[in-house]
Amino acid sequence: MPKRAFASSTGSASDAPPGPEEQPAGTAGEPPAEVADRPPAATAAELTDHMIVRPRSDAPTVGWRRAVHAASGGVINLGAGPVERRRHDLAARIRRELPGPHQIAVTSIKGGVGKTTVTALLGLALAEHRGDRVVALDADPDAGTLADRLTGEPGTTVRDLLDHIEDVQALPDVARFTSLAGRLQVLASEQDAARSVAINRAEYEQVCTVLSRFYNIVVTDSGTGMMHSAMHGTLATTDSLVVVGALTLDSASRASKTLDWLLAHGHRDLVARAVVVLSGDRTSREVDTTRLRAHFSTRCRAVVDIPHDPHLAVGGTIEMAALRPATADAVLELAALVADEFGQPGGPNSV
Image 1 (cartoon, helix red, strand yellow):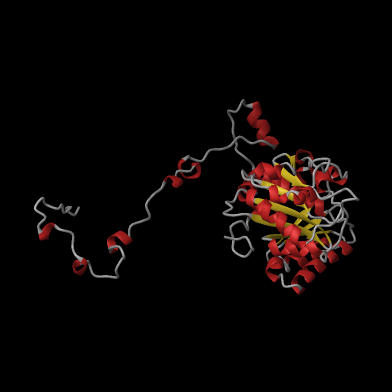
Image 2 (spheres, helix red, strand yellow):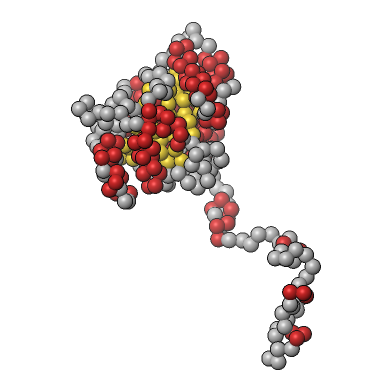
């Protein structure tokens, strides 16, 4: 170990720090080679449970493994099975670190394909598995039903927020215009026919600017069609895009035409990174669903099937616990695919 040099009380030249002309050879300001080669200094951030705590078998919560664990009083623990491990992996992807605000648009050129349902499910899954703030915004210009599917009644609306937007200084100022579905905040579209004036692009961008100040993730139900003014604002601020169709010829064709429209209007990058959701509420044995999936797989980043679910088919308030396992797994997969883009370059809000 090299000896340290200490300045003597007499301050002799031999003990003084070297002058500029005596600095070691090399580029000025660079550390010596032996210092540069050292590994980065450890920090407290490295002391995570994944690094320090030895792996353990979590108690299974489903299937025959759970039955064995319960019957043995916890003595026999076979750990989670493949299905449960996949769910844990998807949940871990959903919790991916998000360095800045992220805006997600759910859209379709055709109505009646489950766009609002997909928006609600995606918002609920993100809010349930993450610790930050998630808000779902209904930007449908035609009295959208997002709040109906999530909270049962619209209450205050985006128009109310716009009327008082200059007064917003803190989160409680925004929260008084939202309702709560689990951990998900919901901002409804205007329902009163006497007041129902569709928000335009400038108003939509104004709302999103405010929401992004106080919420980490904004999920927008963009309404049917692509030509209304707010849609242009939606696309201008979108980091991740979800396009919704169904497993029928007309609905799938409209979903593909949505992608065509986006390409024609300069949104090639959004299309390449998009996730297409195909709803199984309506389908037929005569439809070659394998070819449908293959078609969209060549056009976008991923395709997710959401199967028919009796709970969703009712059209009432959505309860995640009431979904069939296959539906819940599909929703988890969708949320994980969207979260895979968190922190990635490309979107207008990426950092």
